[in-house]
Length: 279
Image 1 (spheres, rainbow, N blue to C red):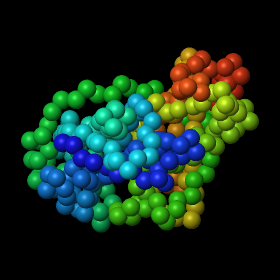
Image 2 (spheres, one colour):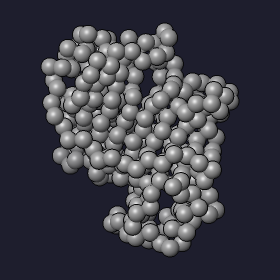
Image 3 (cartoon, rainbow, N blue to C red):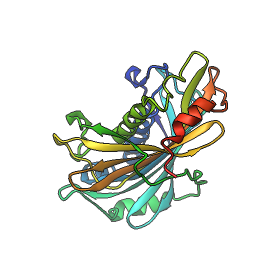
């Protein structure tokens, strides 16, 4: 099924294209329209929790009055969850592919539950194969991870009274910014007129709801792998009060020249990044 998702001027970042985290908003908007088209929009009110998001960025998205075109299909189903596959297009150019696993959610007691029978039947009638996205390296956190604090904003909450899944991508982004500003890394300094960084892939797994409170959460960010032209980050959001991990993420960042072509990491960068290798 194809649905349209409008862009907003506020979605753009300092580089003049849509920020990587805003793509998750587009998946969310497409998913809501998809449920309305299938006449099972009651799921939005009764409870529909995102378990994980995977997104592979194929091309930058620039502001336009014309909406993105999003192809969305059902590619996985069990009693508790459904997997949706997306292809995002701008002016007929493929700009991203993505996967989302979503389960039922009991709003009053704030916990996941099986999908309602009606929704399960509808999803089963649409089930089709879709090639999975490649795996991304993950590394467990240790003392080498860079630690930063994240305070939840009231506006981060959604209709279910916890932090919306799309905003958690913002949290991981803030953790990477804190990481790249560390003196031993120097990644921010590499953003010269001659070089740039861009995200090629980003995955997130949502393990426990993040709620509004005065005390901040902790974001840990480290390096899982260094390739010739790319760096794979591992990150997680921890609740120090409850001593639990609320979400985990992997992100692949590519080092490129000003024209966007991947280029080998400099020795200076490799030396700085090695301090934060988790493996």
